[in-house]
Length: 194
Image 1: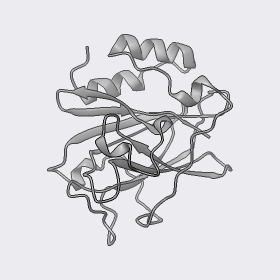
Image 2: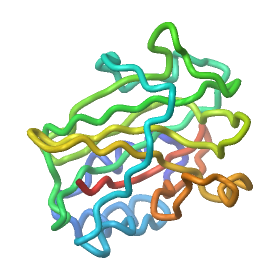
Image 3: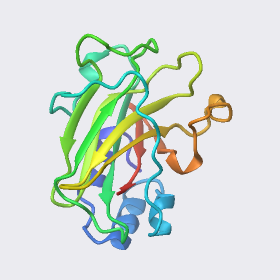
Image 4: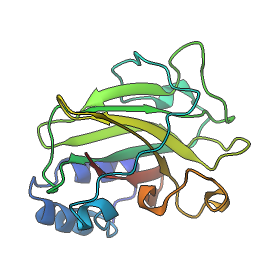
């Protein structure tokens, strides 16, 4: 069983391109990671959620965000961007922003904000921290995802087992990260369907 976020990320990055084989290979590399709800029903796109008041355009091209908050709990968030038929999409923009270890957003600079483009197999990942709670919201990440020439999906991803999930009006169970605990932080997986 992998004991670190790095080993889970390496297992994720070596997954085969074919979706069914990908799920089986990852299950063998670590604890079983089921397919996301969206890919079980290919007609369902990832649910949209509002961007909220803290979005800032022009985030840096950066997937290593953990250095922005060295005291925060480390997490690697990863997944695929897929089309309705669960085929991986290369070259998709994936942008993340979230609260820091104190539940605050950077409104001046680009702390804990970044974007990247999916690789040829549709993979994306960020090394960051677990966002702290703040009044009125459960723990979450904000994302924007856009396939080349496609429309922008704005959504939020949530943490399983959070007490605040029930009372958060934006929460939906299909937007839960599939979370694994490791010796050096957490590893969360989610596949966007656009």
